[in-house]
Length: 487
Image 1 (cartoon, one colour):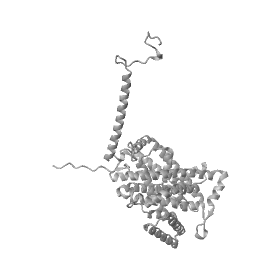
Image 2 (image 1 turned 180 degrees about the horizontal axis):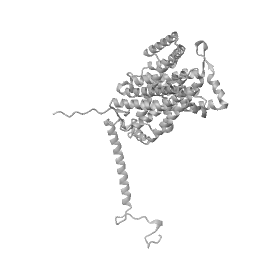
Image 3 (image 1 turned 90 degrees about the vertical axis):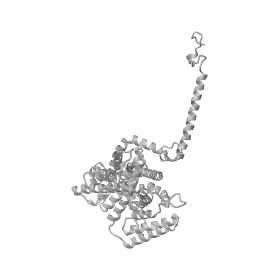
Image 4 (image 1 turned 120 degrees about the vertical axis):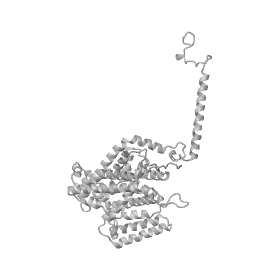
């Protein structure tokens, strides 16, 4: 007689993260959240600076002030330095994140990678389609099709920090991985679609510099004084080649080793990311926002956002396209891989996170500048539409997330509980005998303490009993036994 066949347990999407992945994600999100708050502050400061009549001229003067060596082709405006120089640091970190995900994170497993990759692709394709349809029907320009395709992870996490939601770790990790894949495709879009002409001599020099960078890394050469000057040379050559200079940043990030060797606690990529991420999140991206988000905003200007096809396409792409694309890609992936949603979550949670991904601040502003280069008025209008679309997406996501916040808090508390105080959440130690022995000892100590307290209470009650075996009643007001008169 043969045993009945059993079906394998269905694979869960948004299940609990592994402990190392959880630790990495928590550290990365903590830095990004702080950077996101600074990003919000910088964006608000830019809007105030650019719209207060007494300050508006100074904003223009500072943004367009030029500096740098002209002989090297780098006599650029402050706004240009922020977009091409500081964002190279941001994309350098993005490159390291992508490399780590590919060799040590969720993207290493093709089955696990399918979900964020498909979700990110759909989350870029659908907004581009929404923008294109809006402009085809309205007679607008298709040049800005890529503007609503990007997700700004720092801004999204800042929103989570401000509204105080206890979003479960699996959904936060999904948002982070989604943004990493999103950044990769945004880089490819910038490289392929926004490169007008190429100086092959400068590009060859940048490629040679990248080879030297790679050889030094593989040879074990250490020291910032070697890599920082080389990185600046590579960046300047890439800029002069006509290819967007941020490509140099992501290329160098991808070259770092993100796997550990014997005797290493952290890989070189993790160490460098730990050092550079605060610089990216706390300085580079906020400064870019300061000099990119300063657009003139008025009631009439905001109204125009909904009347011009280019700006309306951006808003609809961010608010509708992102939510529908990411949610649809996630649902289809789960459907066709026969995976089921984690028992703790509902599809409404996935839609809320997809809506939050409609915040497309940093890279959307950058692509908007590239797409409408030469048309200052339309560039500013598209920037305003990015700000408005991101605000609408953030507000909509906030409402959806708040509706489920009590459930998120319950999941979060379960994930964080550490009753044996060993620094590892209890939920990760259920299969460890040592954990159960520690918990048994803890419960024994608690039981012994409860027994001691119970015995102490019983002893005091016995001492208070009278000779008849009844507890003596407490006499109010100091009354005695003589006829009930006061003693």
